[in-house]
Amino acid sequence: MNPLLQKLQPYPFEKLRVLFKGVTPRADLAPISFGIGEPKHATPALIRDAVINAMSGLASYPATAGSEPLRQAIADWTRQRYALPAVNAATEVLPVSGSREALFSLAQTVIDSRSTSEPPVVVCPNPFYQIYEGAALLAGAEPYFVNSNPARNFACDYASVPDAIWARTQLLYVCSPGNPTGAVLTLEDWRELFALSDRHGFVIASDECYSEIYFDEATPPLGGLEAAHKLGRGFGRLVMLSSLSKRSNVPGMRSGFVAGDASILKQFLLYRTYHGAALSPMFQAASIVAWKDEAHVRDNRALYLKKFTTVTPMLADVLDVRLPDAAFYLWANVARTGLTDTEFAARLYADYNVTVLPGSYLARDAHGTNPGSGFIRIALVADVDECVEGARRIVEFCRSLAQ
Ligand SMILES: Cc1ncc(COP(=O)(O)O)c(C=O)c1O
Image (tube, rainbow, N blue to C red; front, side, top):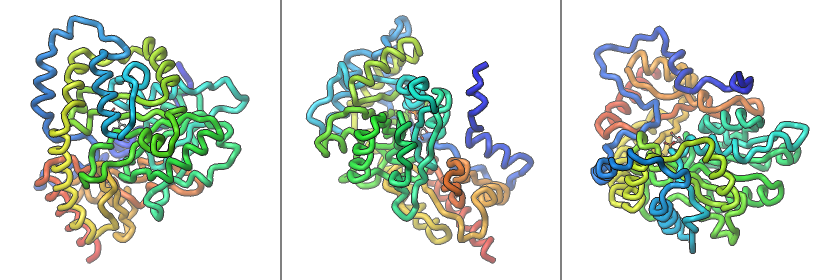
């Protein structure tokens, strides 16, 4: 067996299962889950219909590169969304089966683990989406975690990374809007990252799967390609990953894309020809419809806005929490309750049948601390009433602790 598999960590939800083992939640309260970041709003009818109307696609093998109309729809969306002068549908975009598999397989394409005597490094934010770490380890690289700083809107302190680490770095993941913090990278953050990438030659993979969940219609989150363009830089060594899962409430469709540096995408396509994760023709057809329609995305945002503007002030009375820049998580500091994040999650589950994810499960111990500890992640994915009821229970729980 591949010995690198032994390096993989248990997924946060496995840790949660262990934490909750033997705990019986109160039976008189219906369970409410703020744990998993799975979109729960209804899939728009136009996408469901498009899947059904494309059933004949079951009879063909899909092309790994995706259909030309899908690539064009993605290129058009990317150009418009990020105010880019041009995006080449033939060379600068590639449909993928959800951003998760692409985040993983990209590392297998980009990393050359035989190029130096020491293992290559993949720089990851901390806390982070767990796939980055597994992708790095299975590519034969070492993850290096850069802690996010709550005092700087959870920005990562890249200036703290030693030159010896940068010298071995082949890939850097960023997540903007971030899971779990919701923080969006600023143009200045991008300027710093591009300068580092230009100096040290590493690839930047920008995970932007939450880019369409934001709270002010006038200020959509800045994207990596957009930042590159604004800073007068091309897409060299830069790819962004996007997804329909959250934007269009189709996590089961497994549809996303990678866009950016054509020379990386060329090699990625070669890799994927063997990897074999082409998107089903039915889902390619439905993805075209989804990328071309913004009305359902605005409706989706309106639902999140309602939830966040109702629930955040309720919770801010008892926890340190505020409206994030974007995405659908509240990243709440529980320190003032006197409980650790794991104690908080376990007791909230036992006493109020509400599931939240301890922040320490989403981060690693690095530089003497676990930057997720003391936080909980609350995924506001259920409908408004359920989110409000869950928040009411959290408030009651926190007040019961204070007595
Ligand atoms: C930060 C982040 N990136 C990527 C993904 C993967 O999304 P998908 O594979 O559905 O596009 C998720 C899913 O929860 C996520 O939280």
